[in-house]
Amino acid sequence: MADRREDVARIGDALDAAGVVLERFRAGGEEVAWKGHDDPVTAADLAVDRAIREILPRAGEGWLSEETEDDAARLDADRVWVVDPIDGTKEFVRAVPEWVVSIGLIEDRRPVAGGILNPATGERVVGSIETGVTLDGRPVTVSTRSDLEGAVVLASRSESARGEWDRFRGAGFEIRPTGSVAYKLALVAAGKADATWTLTPKHEWDVAAGAALVVAAGGRVWQPGGGPLRFNAARPRLTGMAASGPGLADAVAATIAPVA
Image 1 (cartoon, rainbow, N blue to C red):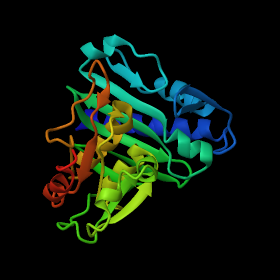
Image 2: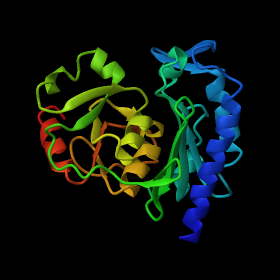
Image 3: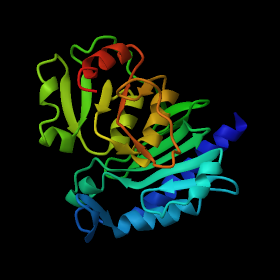
């Protein structure tokens, strides 16, 4: 427990450092470069990456970040930090307050601790499977809802715009388009939403922190086709993910099974 509290404290320190760095930048006012089709990056992404890398990895620990060239040495590490300096860069560029700094810790391919900071809203969700989860310093847990009827389900903004969530409309739950994947998962962990899922492949750095938070808050995270999520793969890409409180897991799995 003492070691895990140290991990959580280190995550908090890194989020503090990221917040200080981001004071130099303005959402919606930064020059954008493109790493590929529909994949923006800004100077803020790179500056946060440098700042948190100085705090997080220690001797023997691996590092995987969207904004750092991948080092295969992480594959031999038992502990790996998986981070996205700004998850939701498109939202950051458009000044939509749904982007976060995302930090996840993986041990033996499992997410065990994580933290997110949303500078636009001031929300901070941090925790681990040993210590539980806090939202702005207050303990939180996942939703206890057991019926999808009336539930709040967070959907990808871009997937919604492409019509990929039309198949779920009329199913009795509210579909709420939201930006960052990590932010959606953190809101589920904090009990502010009941479930989220995506059937679109995601990188590990999109999911690691939020997955750790959901599990630490008493929830479940799994692959859309069934089975647990595993991280620190040679090709760090997941087929998708689903997350909810334990009472909704079977209903969510049944809802997405026909298309998963």
